[in-house]
Image (cartoon, rainbow, N blue to C red; front, side, top):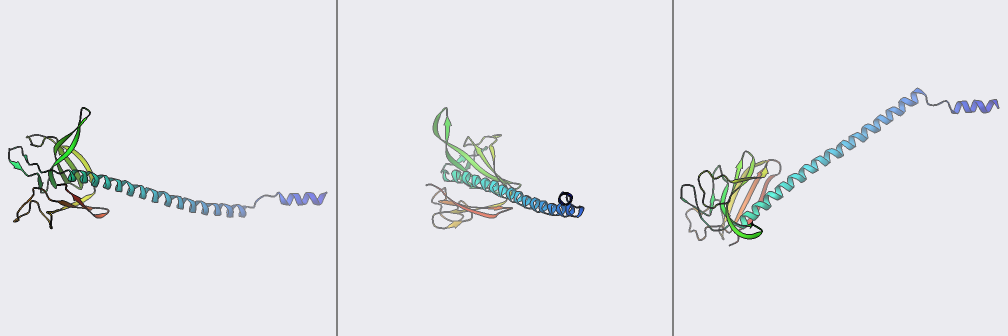
Length: 204
C-alpha cells in the first residue's frame, strides 16, 4: 500500500519551473509566427483590395470616355461671344479635348436623342469630365463636373484621319475631308501604373 502511494505522489507532482518556462517560450514563438503570418495575409489583402479598386476606377473611366468618343458627332457650336467653334477641338492647359456628343436623355419617361457638349480637363492630377446641356454656350454657364480618374500625370492624344496618325486636329497644312477623325488614341500616364493606351473608334 505504501509503495502505491509513493508512485501516485510522484506522478501528480506537476510541472517544474523550467518546464513551464520552456512551454511559455515555445508558445510565444508560435504565437509570434502566427501573428506574423496573419499580418502578412492582411497586408496582402489590403494591397489587393487597393489594386482592385484602382482597376475598377480605371475601367469605369475608360468606359465613360469610350461611350463619349464613339458618340462624337459633326456639329459645330458657338462660344459665349457668338464665334463658331469646331465640332472637335484640342485645347491647351485647361481642356484636354472638347467635342459635341450625341447621346440619349430620358425626358418624362420617353427616351429621345439629344446633343450636348463634352470636355475633358486635367487639373492637378485629376481627370475630369465636363458636360454642358446646351450646345451654344452663354456667359456664366457652368458645366456639370464629374471626376473620372485620380493620379493622372499626363494625357496624350493622337488622331487618325483614315490613312495615318496625327498629333493635332484638325490637320495642319493638309486637306481636311472630315470635321472628325476616324479614331482617337488616348494615352494616360498614371503615377502608379505607368502608361495606359487605348484606341477609340468614331462612328461616321
